[in-house]
Length: 240
Image (cartoon, rainbow, N blue to C red; front, side, top):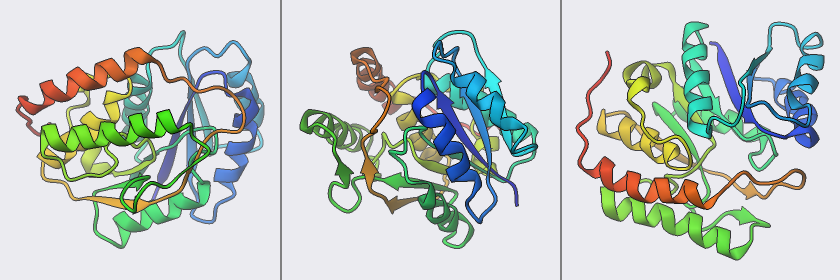
């Protein structure tokens, strides 16, 4: 059973040298794909320097310029499918997602029967540490907005800590995913739901980054707001 953790990066030099060994030391035997969007701080070079130490397990794709979180994951999904991975994960580089929780997401799929598992901040109240209250409110009520507009029963539709079974990513037409920023997370979950896949929410504690800076912007939220409305009227069909 091959497992791939995709970690997009942009200026994560403070974190990338720590998150890689933390994930690769886990007993479940994950591989990592770093997708770096031309970080000027040397993130890609730091990853490259570690590849010899983790030969065959640490992979790097470099892109020129900031092309968006969604496009990074879509690139990673296609690469992972081509390489024959059975489970593909989304994860941040900054330790806001605990590496040990990867096993719980995997178990929700392999033992619990889910096709997609979400590391959820909101399925058991609000489980966020050290985020500014304004950021928490925006994130929480974004998921409330999604539930109201789409009739979607997921508590944390904007979560970025996930496990996908291969079958989900083979079925979704990745070339037709429209949203590239914050809304990408919503679109992927809602599309999977509309195609009949079982989605499980696994409660996790989200911890705000200690090093580096957030990549969120106002435009990302605007895309998600209008994109959710468009999703309400879209028809979904399986690629396979």
